[in-house]
Length: 147
Image (cartoon, rainbow, N blue to C red; front, side, top):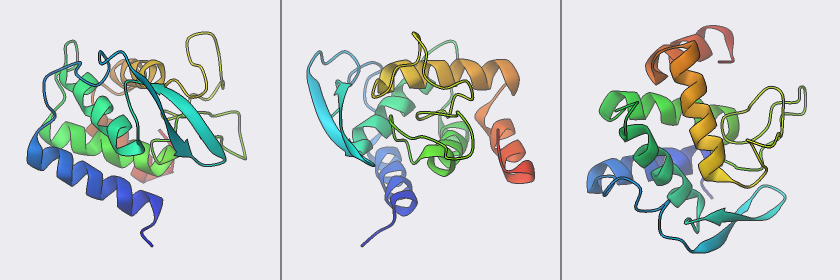
C-alpha cells in the first residue's frame, strides 16, 4: 500500500505529465462529489478524489494573480502534501491548524471543512502574502518545519 504522501506525489507527477487542463475546469464543473479523507467522506465541489483536489490546486495556482506552474506548482505540492496530504478535513493535533493549507486559526466562515476550493483559495493568498511564492514557503517549511 502506498502512503498518502507518496500517492500525492505520484498524482502530482501524473498531473504534470498530462497537463493541468484548462483553468477552472474542475472547479466550474458544478457537480458535487465526495472523496474519502482521513476520518470520513466530505463533499468537494467539482472534485471526486484527492487526486482531483490536487489538480484543482494546480489549476487555481496557475491562474492570475498567481501564475504558479512548473517548479512553483511542485513546491506548492511539497508544502501541502507535507502539511495536510491535501486533505480538506485535516486537523493538526498540536494546534488549531486545519484543512489543506493548515490555516492556523482553524475553521472560519471563509475556510470551511471539506471545501477544497475555498481552502485552496485561502492558502494561495496566504502564500502570496507571506512568502511571495510556494518555493519560498517550501524553503521555510524545510528550514523550520512549518510555513
